Image (cartoon, rainbow, N blue to C red):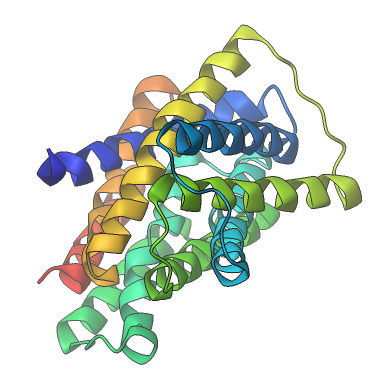
Length: 282
């Protein structure tokens, strides 16, 4: 069962990009995320109690888990949701943030003392060439500048959070760690709402279905699998599975959201996927 975890993760994580659009069509992105992680926090809290895990942890473990949640659920997901709300195509948003494996491999040397080879740097080059091909000269026209900026922040956040999570000294149960990470996401989005956003949620059937998908399949499912993989593998080995996300997300966007892909976009996707694969494979 454990061996198929990466493949389950790819499907669930990729699908999150598809259900993001219906959610932000019926809500403010930050209000939606605050609502989502309030339920996720409560769910992991109940599960921790049910499984008799100690939810009272030390200050150091709390800060580590909370900050990880701010990066993962706050800056990363907030950036993705905000970018798509500003008109960033779902497939391109998925492509940009999936450059994470390349940056993680580049940073894993100085931070995690993992050796970065010439092969990995070649993969880095291919990955960014692919991204440039997809982005082209459409920034500010077909691709909104604010959406691009938010997606880049999301990329930096998920890269930082992956490395941070790997460096954590905590041996907390996954449910307890995920609970406090969800709390970090809630606090982050509440602060953003208080200072910058005008929160609203239309609890339509579409919103509830899409939100249920993200809560149960993504936050409870995919994210827990990701935390398990990071905890039990090297950072570079874990993020290597992300190279499959852009193509999977793009296919889902074409299938469910009727988003078109040009031949140049497909070429960029292909080059980036090859680059990430080269940079992260053993």
